[in-house]
Every structure is written in structure tokens, then in C-alpha cells.
Length: 210
Figure 1 (cartoon, rainbow, N blue to C red):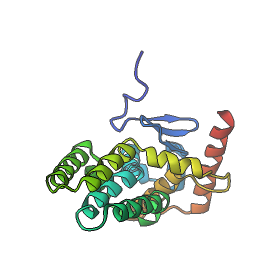
Figure 2 (figure 1 turned 60 degrees about the vertical axis):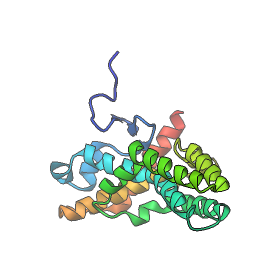
Figure 3 (figure 1 turned 30 degrees about the horizontal axis):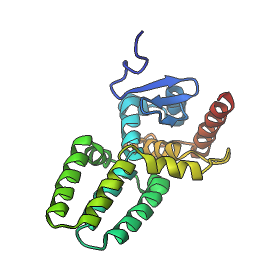
Figure 4 (figure 1 turned 90 degrees about the vertical axis):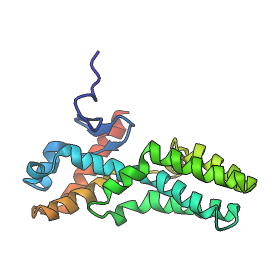
């Protein structure tokens, strides 16, 4: 049986309920709706590129938090480092859409990569172990196994319930990426409010079909 995701190099599939990635991330919009928000945008920027950038931002909370942790473990008390890391993860996970800068997605994809995370974890934990900083090493190991598979993200999701009146966190990210790219291509969306309402409608419809 053919893999429904295999047609896209970015591993996402377009459905009537929106766009879903192989990792299970949903964006509640369609190719046709994006063309309606910003006519001509997809002639200059591919849908795959928009979703690829959105995925980089969606995944950035864990990778940036781990990077911050491994820096802090060398300079402050490991328990303070852990507390700051958890606070940063919560803040960035919930508010990243407000910090989107066009062109930064490439940097985030590098930070998000397994190669970068494994290398920085291996080097940091090895140095801490050589320095006999066993508490810091233990904290670093614990957070790697919590954040790398996205367990902390799942914890925030359980505490947070998206109402029908709010955009999901993923949709906020994609909305801002569409706006930034559309402004660059001089095809800025004419009705941002309508775009938000379409996102909400598809999210609501998907919830009702579960």
C-alpha cells in the first residue's frame, strides 16, 4: 500500500480537514484557502516551503530549551538551570508565533536536527561527567529523554485546551509565516480576520469528526 505522505518531500498530506504532517502536526487550512488569503503567494513560494518553515518553528521549543539547558548547566546551579529551562519551554511553546522572523526557519531546522542535539548532549554530558558534576549530568540526561521525544510538549497540551474561539498554536505559527511571506512577495493578505476564521472552522470541524 502506498504511503500517503510519500508524495511530499516535507512529509505532509493535504486533506479536507487541513494539512497533517507525518509527525501528526495539524494545520487547519488548505492550498485553496491559502491562495484565497494571499492570491499569487503560492506562485512564488511553494506550499511545501510554508509547511517546512512552520514545522521548524513548531518543533523549536524542545531543541532551543535543551540547548539553553546545556549552556546553563555549566554556569549556574543545575536545579536553577532546570527551572529556567522549564519556564523557557513553556513560554516559547505558547508564544513562539509572536517571534517569527522570516529566514530564521533554516537556523531552527539545524537546531532541531537529531545530529545537532545528539552532539551537543554528548559533548555537554561528557564534560560535566569529567568534572564530576553528577547532579548536573543527571539533570541533563533526564531532560534529554523528556524533551527529545516531546513529552513536555504533551504535558502542556494536556493542561491547555484550545477553545473554538482561539487559533491552535500550530495555526498561529502558519498564519504568521503566511503573512510574513506574503508581505515579502507584495501580496499581503487582504483579510487576516477571515484567514483566522477559516483556520478555526476547520479545527472545529476536525474536532467534531473525532
